[in-house]
Length: 444
Image (cartoon, rainbow, N blue to C red; front, side, top):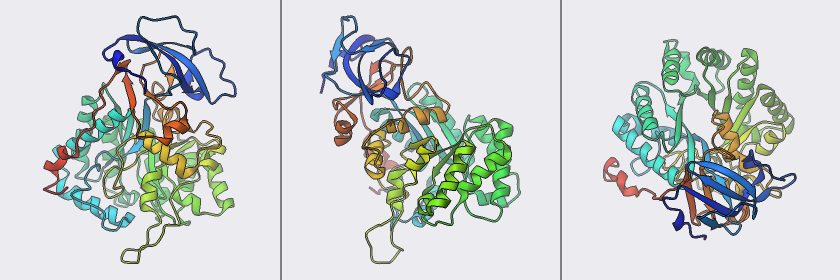
């Protein structure tokens, strides 16, 4: 790989002969029509991308590094994570890999262990991983049932402040929508807490009799506070799980003006073509965006019943991303859970996530503009258009690879990469799992 050692501590320099996806360039006067990739020179001045020109056209600079065609991507955007659950696997695993066991195990661990210090320590560990891998913007869901809401949301606000110069972080509340069957003021309380933290409102939706009533209440609470919405939706292979359709109807019925992101939407892929097409058309009309969590859903979905002889999974949990995209629905992929009962693996590495999503959902032949799924699209949905793109005059936040195109990068996602934040090359240090041993009660 290109030797970047000379750039350590450098404030201004020129990167020549870099390959970048054309769809991620903004403000540069380049001929990109019909091109997936373009070759450019990038001049970095302090924290800013000061110049983007065709490769070989930039004026010489005292400090120049030739990338020899190596790819540059902007720092990446992870729009669906669970930092409050992360890294509890050693003390609370998933015995059979099923969704039901994950729910039970996480609930038990939350009650037993989720003190402010426990949540804060695991969040910080996870963010150090994401930072080293090249992520600059994260949305995390926060388990928000009392009494945990009074612990985790204040911790999130502290962590947001601590990390404000490295990762832009914000939260989405998470609770089962059936919690609203108890008319005790819970929704107003949690919505106010979310508003104070600059987060978004949301819930896990189920096919319950009161679903439409509760959706209307959530939409009204969000509209009244100027909050966006983020739902966990139909994370099942049951074709009768159709809450995505009901959310779209609620958005249209309430004339909601904010942004709506729906995660998972797995059951859409188990419905017949006509029904799925009708739902997709409704989702597009309602202006809803969809994020798939391919690694986590592939882990949980398609398992045999507990106690049964293990069999080869035939259902892998991916929603209809291609069909949604073709209908004009903004689509994304994200990390979801990390080393917890919902997903035993992961490291908040969006290069790995995008690579696996390509293999699982076939974002290739042609590759088209799928790289937007971890860059510009989630950045825009999270209302941070300063992230996820290489913009003339914008922040010099990017990742440099030796691979000269996405196929080379994805063939070796674990190959060395260099991460630059505000123009400066960072030291990529991944934290050791042993740091968390003190929280694990002797488990490892």
